[in-house]
Image (cartoon, rainbow, N blue to C red; front, side):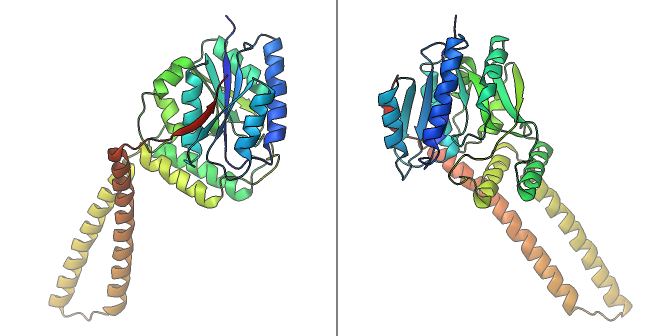
Length: 315
């Protein structure tokens, strides 16, 4: 049986790139249908994440022109991860297999056939992994490398050099649907699902048009989200740090008492000020980490919907 494929593409203010993206994706999907890699019921599902430009109007126009385009519009901006999840859960109702990718044409669409080959070999999840990072700036390349190393060091399973270009079968999507957390970090959740997995390696190109939706501030926020969503090691580090500082404080107290009874002069001021600043900074840092975890608990306990679909352009 020829599988039904849904290509899920989250969009936020992508009017500059959408005409070219839709053209290339439709051409590729058409070739895959002709070669019976996927069925004619396959679709390209654009997810409008509360865009402020004409993105949704363009998606609606594409749907009217060709039934192979589908769309769903979120009621307001919920962020890339929630938009992607909304698309995957929508596709889950219709497809046998889904492939998620970004709208900026940086992911190589010519390897879609390789994803489907891995699926036909029995893989339920296939990761798109970058071969190298030559197109990245020096800072982005090294910060990404540091991020992956830090995540693995903290015990979080992530696939190095993998973003959100991945294949998930309906079975894997059913597994993903069981994860109910509000604080989404799909790169960490998907490896937790299990099942047979594999990787497809590709070269990532430059963004075709428009601006990156992940500036430095969002990248740092995303990294923090991933670390605090999947690891409690920062809390253990705080406990260890507290123990070390307590031990050093006791040693400092003993030194001060011995110095006093021995009649030694104490310089005092510099050591006291430095100690206060150091301990104050450590305490504020620890409170910040604790605040991150408490904030996540607060969000999870409220259990608000992760997204609300305002409109859907069905197959």
